[in-house]
Image 1 (cartoon, rainbow, N blue to C red):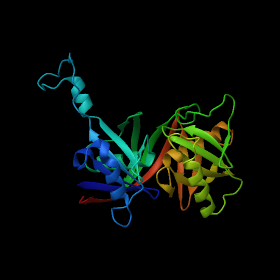
Image 2 (image 1 turned 45 degrees about the vertical axis):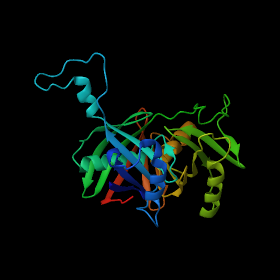
Image 3 (image 1 turned 60 degrees about the vertical axis):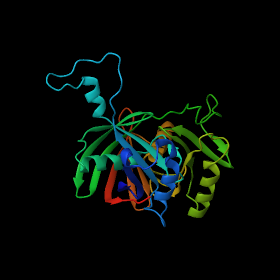
Image 4 (image 1 turned 30 degrees about the vertical axis):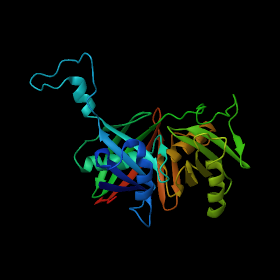
Length: 294
């Protein structure tokens, strides 16, 4: 099975064309857990399965361009790229900004797509633009979309007019940016071991029927913040683009951020930008192409 490995700010993904996977779509969890194992597999925070759009069956088809024999609608569908995200534990995720960025880098490297490109998830399309490239490094503008503070399928406890809630003794702000997040504001970030323990308690708390991604945030003023990410189905990670978008959404709502936010995570910094929705300025490294034996 041929795969590509990518890393965005240290958040790494394995990108696999769906036809390469030796298991049907409903049985991918075990494969994901095995290939993401850092001692016995390739090692990664998650897996992206992608495929080119298939020809859709139609009772009545629009005419084809002269000489091609291919209906317009079918040509458009075959030009689309669809993807599914899985976390390291084998669970499906609705969206991943870094996973999408890795897929965009792979498709551009393979000359299977050109910038700007639109990637299609089950929750809808997202646009990605190649800003620059230096060898294996791709600078990308990644669309996350509009934040949603009213997603009751993620947050059934929501009350009208409430902004923050408590669980496991921690105050948090719930927000969806395609996937669910709990943003915790801190005057000062505690030790990493303490943050990891709290993140685990929040991620699996019974308040969240689909579990939740957790961000611990220390606002630093001047459009900057420090953060510790604890991702659903993964644990502590070095970076998260949807997590950065969630932080940006909450801080903007509270009047603590303007049109741009710099999210500091270790030695890296992620820029979140508001342009009628949230975009992330992403740097992704195309690490390698390999073959996995299952």
